[in-house]
Structures are given as structure tokens and as C-alpha cells.
Amino acid sequence: MNATKPVAAIAAMLISFAGIGAITHYSNAAANAARADIHAVDANRPVTTLPAIEVVPSSAQLRELSQPGGGAAATTGAQMPYYSFAAEQVSA
Image 1 (cartoon, rainbow, N blue to C red):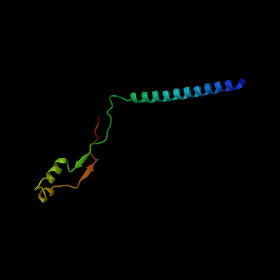
Image 2 (cartoon, one colour; image 1 turned 90 degrees about the horizontal axis):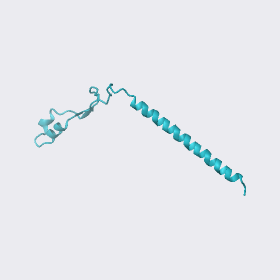
Image 3 (tube, rainbow, N blue to C red; image 1 turned 120 degrees about the vertical axis):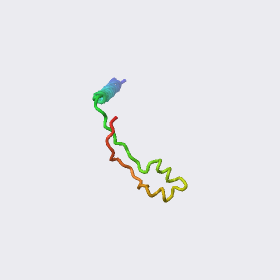
């Protein structure tokens, strides 16, 4: 029996195990660093979020327009439908 074949197979397995261990260590270190950065955020600083969205016409205005008899008389004060993102900033 040739002794070099089992030695080569064992060496290949050891090399692959070392590679898997290195990749696992690297990914865990990267995840821990990212987790530390997430938790390092100052808790006293407000988080800036998207501004409130103003929708025109509102649901109440739409209900008023869809009621019977709400035809031309109700549409005189109706506005063109739009979404407004230009409201003031909201902080959480």
C-alpha cells in the first residue's frame, strides 16, 4: 500500500479545516465589529426620520366628495390630489 495517498488526504483535510476556521473567525470578527458600531450610537441624540407625508385630498374630503349630492358644489373647494414631502422634520 502506498503511504503517500493517506498522508496527502489527511493533509488536504487539515488544510480545508484551517480554511473553514479562518473564514469563520473572520466573519465572526466582522459581525462583532458591526454590532459594536450599532450599539455605540449616542442614545441621547434624536434619530432623524423622514418627514410626515401630507396627502391631499384627505380621506374625509374623499368621503364628502363621494356622497350623493356632493357633486359640483363639493368640488369647488376640492384640490388637485398630491403628496407633500415638504413638511417639517420629525424626530423619533
